[in-house]
Image 1 (tube, one colour):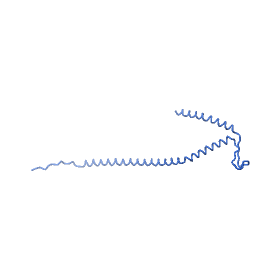
Image 2: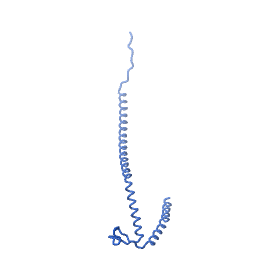
Image 3: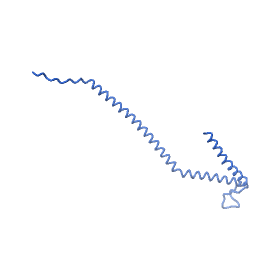
Image 4: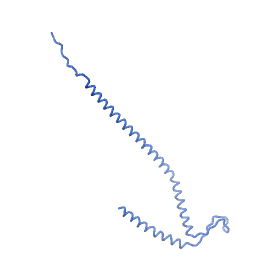
Length: 143
């Protein structure tokens, strides 16, 4: 069963990755001409910083940057749920410890009650064996 799962995963990976790799390579080859990137909006003729990079590199960097920024934004939005999960996990651990302590006390109290009941039975048996047998009442002789 495990072998079939691994083989299916490999086949799906090949079916997805090979066409995707071919598309990325074709995109990179078609867009390899240089593009000037500048971060100076005030002076386009003499920018403070300018770099010439292939277009596909610029697009890949922007896509990766977009994925990272989107991941960080999603992570920040989910902070409330992570905090709630941590709080509930702490509450759960505390309640489990409390339950364990209550169970231990119940066992101890049950053992004490059993011991007390056994001692009471033993005392009752001893009291019954130490007591003299009742004598029957004899009527006084009549004269």
